[in-house]
Length: 345
Ligand code: C2O
Image (cartoon, rainbow, N blue to C red):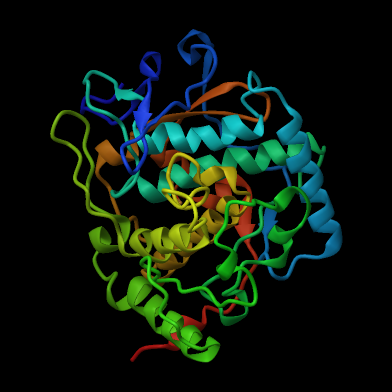
C-alpha cells in the first residue's frame, strides 16, 4: 500500500453532479459498484495480437461495417450491463462532472484540466475498445483515430455520418466539407479551407512543440488528493485542439453544445472515441519527441487509481502506472506523417 495520499474515487459515493453550465445531471450506475468484487488490472497476454488503430478517414468499408455492428450491439445492451453504450458514455460523465467523492475526503473527483487528463482517457478508451471487440468476437478490433492534425483528416470523418455512428446532436454547419477549426472558441473564423488548414498546422506545432517544452505545459498541472488538491491548469493539447473540437462538433442549437460539447454528454457521440484516440496517439508522439524518458515520476500521480469494467464485465482497479506504455496494453497506432512537426514558424 502506498504511504502517500493518492487520488482515487470512493465508489460508494456516486451522486448527482453538475454539467458545465451547472445544471444537475445524474450518470451513476444502477447498482452500487461498491458491492461488486474488484480485480486488479493485469496486462493483456503477450500472445494477444496488437490492435492497430488507423486514421478514421482511411479505414475501409469492411472495418466500418464491423465497427457499426459492434456499436449497434453495445446500444442494444440494457443499462444494467456495464458494457452498454450509455454506461460507457456515463463513465465519462461520472469522472468528468464529479459524480464521485474522493476516497478519504469529501472533495469531488474530476479528471479534466490537470495531469489526470491523458492517462484517464487512455484507460477509458482502452476498455471501450476491448469491449467492442469482444461483442463481435474480434480480438484484433481497434478504434480508429480522428487524425485532425493532418490536412486530409481535418474534417468530420465520413464514417461518422452513417449508420450507428450518426449523432444528430452536432453542429450542422461543421459537417463535411467544412474544415475543422482546431482552435475553435465559439466563433466562426470564416477562413477559406487552405488558410484554415495552414492555421491548424501552425497551431499544432505550438501545442506539441514550442508551447509544450515543459512537462507541466503539456501534461497539465499536478492534481493532488484532498481538499485543496485541484489545480485547474490544463495542458496545451487538452485546451485545444481537445476542448476546441468538442465544442466545434457539438450542436450550436443545444444549451451546452451537446453531445460532444459538454462533459456529461460527450461520450454519447461515437466520434468521441476517435477524438480521444488521436489525443492518446499525440501523447505517445510527445513522449517520443523527448526520447521517452519518464515525464512524471511523482508516486502520487503514478498510483492514482480508477475503476472501469472490462470486457468480461468485471470491475477493474487500474493505476496510472499501468497505462504508461501502450505497447504493454497491446495496441498501437498506424504510422502517419505528423506534418506539423515541420511547421516551425
Ligand atoms: Cu473527458 Cu474529451 O473529454
